[in-house]
Image (cartoon, rainbow, N blue to C red; front, side, top):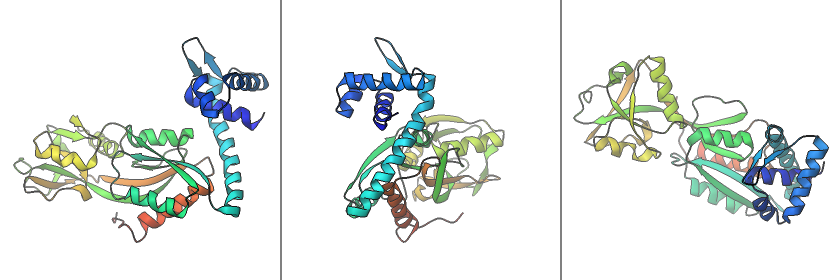
Length: 302
């Protein structure tokens, strides 16, 4: 088995198209097809199910894909370590982020990393499916690191928590509950909520809290940007649980706490727990520690 065969396999698995994979690899399509057939003969399995309309991974191909990525990552890490000893860090890191990333000045962070390591290419992916989608991409080897909001640990991920803040309830100033300081979840069963789509960490936290309390709730509107949640409340579309740091100082709104339940929003940076990060990824994580956990950001007490 040659590394070239694994590289071709991963390219076809990610593109699910031999023509696109050959363009990506800058290799003629016949060469890619021959390499895949050679790999299948050596392993004694079919890696792709092929029809005239589509290409898909077989069960064996699904098993091989994370292993192939791990092998290629290890080779890349070794190559980058040797290159770094000669002329600084090089390589590529794929970074995932949420559609809204409060508490982190991401352009400043990436700009600083580029200034310190100009030989490293950064590719940024914004996940419309929230933290759940980013976690899946990390486990699958499609990302090297990602900023996520997860309600707890997940198998296959190494997580560094960057911040943890309470979720507070935002209601209109004329709402019947507006004069109270803390509200039990049971009193919110008749409310219509503005919340984030399933897969977002703060949505999971709130859903679990209501389920634990045995209270059903109605989500009327789903939004992906944490910073705009209060605007929808202001215009009478519902109430919302938002991280405390974006709770508005607005005469038209009131901010309440929950009684009998602690709801916490967390922000973390996650990597794969099964793949050794490259030298470039380790340098990025070190910068995140300094930029976010150090003097450049304030960590909220738990």
